[in-house]
Length: 222
Image 1 (cartoon, rainbow, N blue to C red):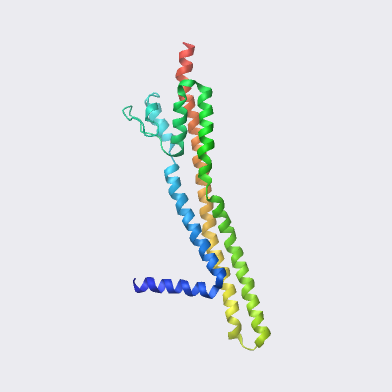
Image 2: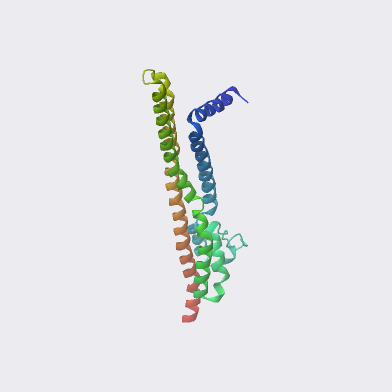
């Protein structure tokens, strides 16, 4: 272990020790929050199937790339759809022969099954972001109470004895705000990303059903 890393670990431990259990709780909330942020970021990378690209290739093939959905055969020139939209497109394609109503029903079932997964852990992240400053406020109260306890026992004539409680109050308050602020920003960004993926899936499913329905309607009209 290098000296720099050892010194960093020692500084973190010293700060947590000075802040007490409240500082430990804030530190834990921060670590858990960043773990959830990274997990959601990686999940959204895989969940974003980019429906517009798949539908553009499918339309260029005149709808002949139905078998390329979700990793199917690629000899049609259309790459498979991935992510949440891939599952929705697979459900729609499986019901293509049964008509428009069946495709709509399958699309709704697939969206109902896979879309809620996009919001997983976002509620927990919001709770952690809201709890961190409240824990900081609790640490402030504890630090002020410690300061008054010292004043009660030894009087106000020795500022150095009161400094410990005041330092604890300010340190824990600052830690709570530092942990909460970036988590709030990341939560807002991740929520918008989840909403964007959901909106694209719904729009893509609607367009895919329309593309699959048009040949059947044209044949019926003929």
